[in-house]
Length: 212
Image (tube, rainbow, N blue to C red; front, side, top):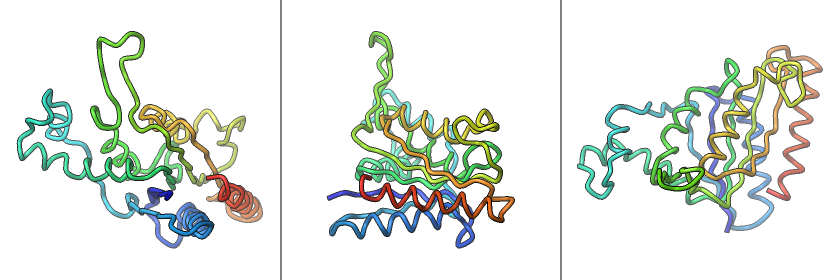
């Protein structure tokens, strides 16, 4: 049985284009086969706490089994979010590009799930790369929207698109290397250019339903 973890990253509700595309894709994917599950985690409209000093002390404790009750409490949400990630074999993330990066809720979620000993291992004695990704065997779909155009690969503004590169890098760091990005551009301009971009995204997502 396949399970998608759906991270809903837009702060907007029904006005969110990325959220609307995400939900349409999830419905189509789930309808393809009986028993498919979707677990939704809202991070755009529900605040995810920022990492704190207590969180860091607990996460990097040299003996995890000896963490105090306070430390366990500091990591409780992180543990839940990491468990959700491991329980799924696919990840669908809606993340509109904000100021050339990702929304703050998406960043907060990432900070909570990139955990030493949980989603990556670190061994300073290991030759070459001391880091080992632990979230392997999964693939991800990123659905994003951009206010202007030319932010995709080869575009005039691609060098300012830090959102896609960041998400690919951080997901790859924990072991999710098969990442597909579907984007809508011209969100702020609207009109025919936006409509055409939105329709291209819809077609791309429809094509992905079969293979995702």
